[in-house]
Image 1 (tube, rainbow, N blue to C red):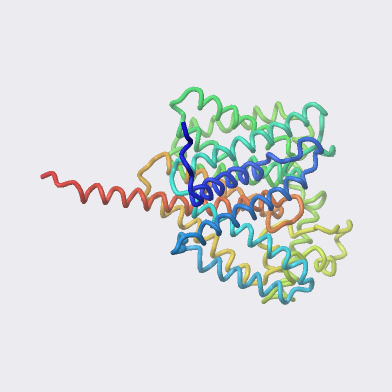
Image 2: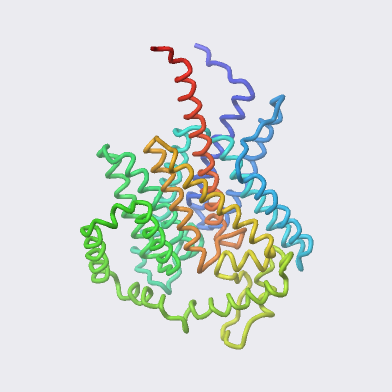
Length: 432
């Protein structure tokens, strides 16, 4: 029996979707580093896979006589942000470095539009999210295994697929709400419920052993936002009693090193909290001196050395950043760059609330809530560290920003198709 032939267009469609699956897997922490343990191999693979996916997608589009792309409310603000990025790179104190950052930023934006134009139904959306969950669970489980096996503490160096403690903790914060949305959608299926509950336990364990205070703050922000979205729980005293008992139990069973780390969040004079305050002050001084075009993408760590105050005792190394996403973008890209970036974020969140009010499919609505809460977690975590552009080890986490934004507009396209189908069924209904 002969196999059915596949035309070149279909082959390219399959290839692009396969590369997207591979891309999501590597972004989620499954890398090509099993033998040598080098996370940089995964980062290079991530870029290469993304470049290949975008390239073959454009080839597929070029074959069509009429090239069409999905239009979104993001198109114009993204264009403005790209222009500010180019301007900041041209006037940069280190143009070569800035254009490398601009190249990587283009890849991240390209990934967003790649997903928006190729993930066109709920099955594909659930598939890539499930693949992401599997990849992150693998990575976090691996980190927990090493942590327990080697009896590691905060000061020990551990293998983290995401490069460091902050990144390791952040990915758990980003995935917990998405996993919860799957749990809600499949809670009536016993096997699926057990799997997602176990996955949730793994992510929470990973969050705890990350020793990342920014991630703990991010998780708290996600949790509070979840309560606001489901305000019915505010009237349920049993819910708050359960939370109180959980907090007390965790305090009793957590190791002393983690308790000390939690308490240190309130210490504004010592440790890394003490360094962040002068760093933020230096960022504000840089904004004052470079308000329009900034110092150039990727130049913060060099330029900020001139703005260190006498209160800074330790040397700020290369790769140092503002420890706040907004106070990092503004000095590098200028005020206009920051404003255009904020517009993208505002439009994305506005779209989330707009869709929540019109989605009738409860499973799709749960997925939207999970994605929105993941985006909330990203920005809470980004108030004390920086997951943006290609700052060394955190590039995978920086991609989650554009990944989540893309998912919001994928859901919008799915909702539009559902509405068109419903309108079509009404038009063909001629019953009296």
